[in-house]
Amino acid sequence: MLSALALALAQAAAPTPIPAIEEARTSVIANDSALFWAAFEGCAPDKLKPLLTEDFRMLHDLGGEVAGDRAAFIGMLSEQCADREPGGKNEGYKNRRLSVPASREVTPLGKWGVLERGMHTFHELRQRPAGTYGADDPGGPTWVQVGGARYIHTWKWMAEEGRFRLQQSLSIDHGSAEEYPPKSG
Image (cartoon, rainbow, N blue to C red; front, side, top):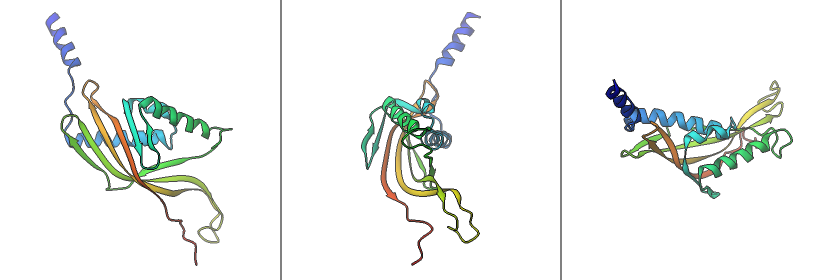
């Protein structure tokens, strides 16, 4: 009985091997969606801790090193979310990130983790003036694409936890979106 209990405890504590690439891809895509929802539209920085390594680092082509560790990144997003609250300097601001279909690639990095690369677009919720799309258009809130970029993420396999955590984010090639609908000339 005691040896069976010892065996069960040893098996429970055994590190989980990194999953095959298709399972890893599915896991990373789910993590990516949760990460960007929490950072953008959901404005829920508390949801980021289990997705990031403690030594997480974010590098940005426009801002340089945006965050040198997980605590700094979560703190930065907490401030941004507080600014969106009633009375904040960006009260009511809403944005979202969308992954560009078929742009994502997930590549194994041995037994260490995976590399995720892709493109995404950024959108802001804005008030569309009446008549924008014709005389019958009443206007109203609408998501407007404001830009896009490429990203490269390194996801570390945490064998003791049986999951991936994001260790580094490179956000590059940011650009503005063309005005839409275009102004008629």
